[in-house]
Image (tube, rainbow, N blue to C red; front, side, top):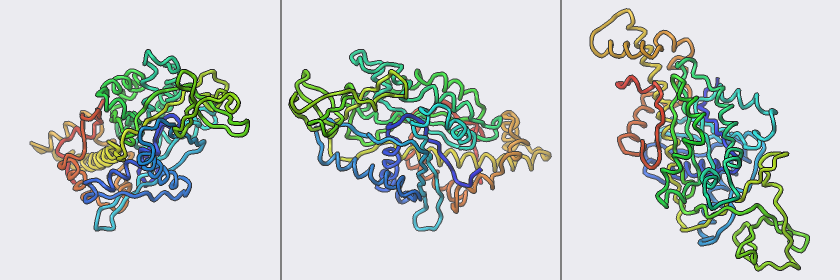
Length: 423
């Protein structure tokens, strides 16, 4: 087991996971919590680190220069695991911790069973799981006016069945090793602005019902749904058949045929009248969801409606992770105290603690796997007492949202069963 807190990001390609991390950094860096806790990218891999920087720069550039335009975004693909390391630190101190976000590329699911063992091993070892969901495909699959998308495309694009299969490897060790699973609908700005976010949450519950049901059977797994607006002012506009335009038989560009088939719109939002002497069109083979599959995923086009970069709820992911892991450490600490008192029964609060612990079957078991000191190593150089103070400030300041703005806790872990936690 690693001494670094690790988050496994699972989901389809181009769902917006990198943009979400970029939004997390930006929201915390420029938001009101910067006096409580700071964050920065310390990713060792230069290629991965540049992706985060480029993501923020590209999004802000699009907001400033593409107002009103409809264009394609998130066109890049990756066939590798990528680790992004974010460093959280306490202002005016040298105390800091790292959280590694491991991105399981969507292409890994498309490569048969080549990477199965690697993914399964990570599922068994990691503490936190983020299930990234492409909201446009999730919602357009049930849009009666869209004949290009359906449940089969959504399930395949978002790897619904693969997620279910891989999460079956999750192991909470009979309740002694708590886990956090967060389902994250990304790029959901359109539905937020239309007041239809509840429809998105309901769709997540419907589509991922078998996975949610299986996870709910674990003793000590917290399950949350957390919709995230990765940009705020770039909204989903429509889906169109994935096409490419061959210009003068020399240049290929992604495009959509619009205006009653009289115009072509290119990936950057520019529009031209179709000229049969200049333009030739073909299906974009890159839109095939899986090799040897007949399913073609339509392109999702987005429109800029403002120039302000305003991601929403990206920071909540960080707060939920810190809060969850702190509870995990404090729970272990309290159980250790209870074990010491096990043969010294006292009336009052101690009996309530012990009764709760016995009911959850953890007393006398937890230390077999982990001690609070071992778990606390993942806080780096931040003492548990200081992390508790930070989380309390975030809670008391109203920075951690719970069951609002679409965020919904489907199932609490047992970590919060002993309410009066202390260090």
